Amino acid sequence: MTLPIVHHPDYDAQFSADHRFPMSKYARLIKVLRDKGLARPDNEHRPDLPGFDMLARAHAGDYVQAVLDCTVPRPIEREIGFPVDARVSRRAQLASAGTLLAARLALDHGLACNAAGGSHHARRAQGAGFCTFNDVAVAALALLAEGAISRALVVDLDVHQGDGTAEILMGDSRVFTFSMHAAKNYPLRKAVSDLDVALDDGIEDEAYLAELARMLPLIADHAKPQIVFYNAGVDPHRDDRLGRLALSDEGLRARDRAVIGYFRERNIPVCGVIGGGYSKDVDALAARHAILFETAAEFA
Ligand SMILES: [Zn+2]
Image (cartoon, rainbow, N blue to C red; front, side, top):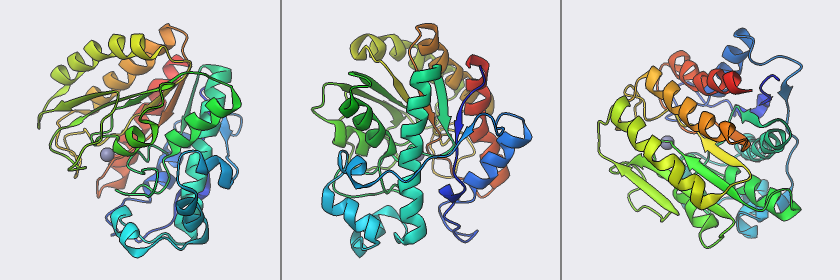
């Protein structure tokens, strides 16, 4: 089987090149995946717009409507980090639909990745931290509502805590949220996941991977998931502008292999999303995000 990859050209909302958020990484990533032969016409899938109801399972109705209408209040736009115009709104909707599509493909094929997603700072009532809609929460709640699954696990290894995901899914015993992140990084006020591991600054490959290996059996036993949503943010990399950790490229690869391998060996479907990654060097950044797809393809 080849790895199903979900992508939409409008994942890129076309910010200026000097914007703090490296928007061009989405277009660059899919180009890298196509150049490597990982994304081809026969395994690339394109999401449709999700509609209000699907988004409103994870988010407050008035916030969803404000994003769809591009009338998000200025203070919330400031917390998100950019104005929610038509392109940003469309991109946020498509990224959520893309993670849901990847999750469906994962249920069918065992493994699939969205070449976007991991907008884990978006909370129920508003977006924050470059995140407009919480695609993983949207997708998990959609599959639960349909009865496609009854239990899910979120493994969030982006360097920032998955505070929005934790908040939206808090009290929902069907979804176990796990976040391993840099203790001193954004967000200042952490939410409470089902399990949080807060790491010291500067941790390197070996110690990071040892901690991850210790956690995987714990979370798997607690969650007993029928699908895993894996946020493979590359901002724990030592060259990341916003990370505080010190993983290498090979450390990220070993991390992805550890997570995907653990669950695939147990025949549990895995839906990968790319999460955060911040660098002025978009080629380096796209290459880092491609590691998830290269690694997933080994298991597909
Ligand atoms: Zn991050």
